[in-house]
Figure 1 (spheres, rainbow, N blue to C red):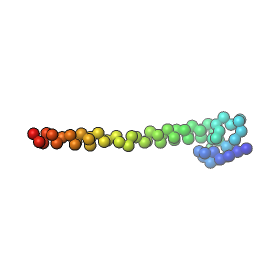
Figure 2: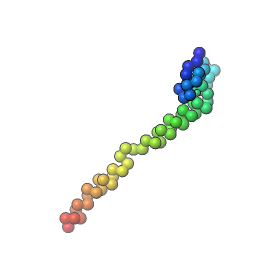
Figure 3: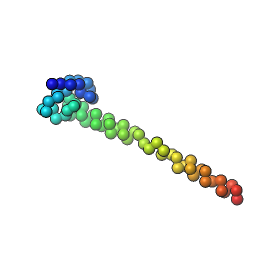
Length: 65
Ligand SMILES: [Zn+2]
């Protein structure tokens, strides 16, 4: 049996003989894994620049002096 390779869409062997299931080849398996990892690195913490904003609020004490 074959199904569509999730990476390239070409027919992939669905039997136990295919060690790279559900992909059609080792190349597709590795490329798909790398694309997942790549996307993970592109998503940083959403509140990376917030500490500066909180520090600004603390400065009013100096002005009152
Ligand atoms: Zn493929």
